[in-house]
Amino acid sequence: MAASHSLQAATLTDASTPVLGAEVSSATSGQHAANAQLLLQIQQLQQEMQMLRNVVERQQKAIVQLQKDGRDRYLDADRRLTDLSQQLSDVKNQKTPASSSDQSSGLPVVSGTAKEAYQAAYALVKQQKFDQAITAYQGFIKNYPDSSLQPNAYYWLGELYMVKDLTQEAERVFRTVVETYPKSLKVPDASYKLGLVFARYGQMDKAKAQMNEVKSKFPKTTASKLADQFLDTQK
Image 1: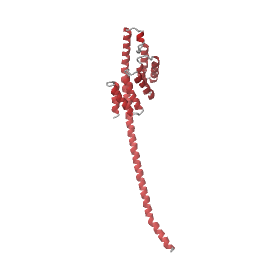
Image 2: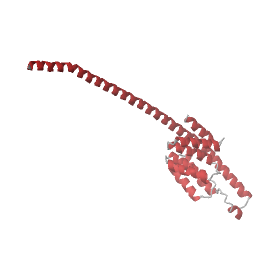
Image 3: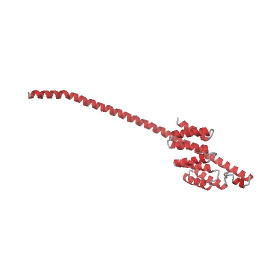
């Protein structure tokens, strides 16, 4: 009787072994499939991340090139505007002697000393002595508050801050140009630079809106053309 029970137990064990083996094999196969799927998803994510990096790098290169092109254009234009401003001031001084009414009009006057200080700072920019140029423009802004070159000085100070990656400081002085000197010829340029500031912050929607505003408010200007080029890089 004991032998019969033993035989039955052996038979049950032998019969169930293939079933358990099949279950283990099925579970292992399922785990391999899940691992393969997970690996595929990871690879896809890595590819997408690389594509995004490439897009960001292209945008950054485009922004840097736009900044360089704009800076070169503005250097030449600013020099010519400074010379013209001085010529107009000289003509005014020759034709009309200073009077109390002139002094109380609030019109800024470019003195020879102010022009020399501005040009000295400007020369440092051209020589790429950026730290010295920053100090020089800061000194100009402090020492010649009534000069008509104040918005120009603020603008170039902003450019220098951009070069030195002092983006928040750049935003502050570009806003000064736009808000404090709304009639200055530097307002379109400073407005365009604010768009680049937003782009540096990664606020691309805000940057695009700023560039569209530049195009709308200042058509047919160099700043408008540069804003258009920036928007083309975002398409």
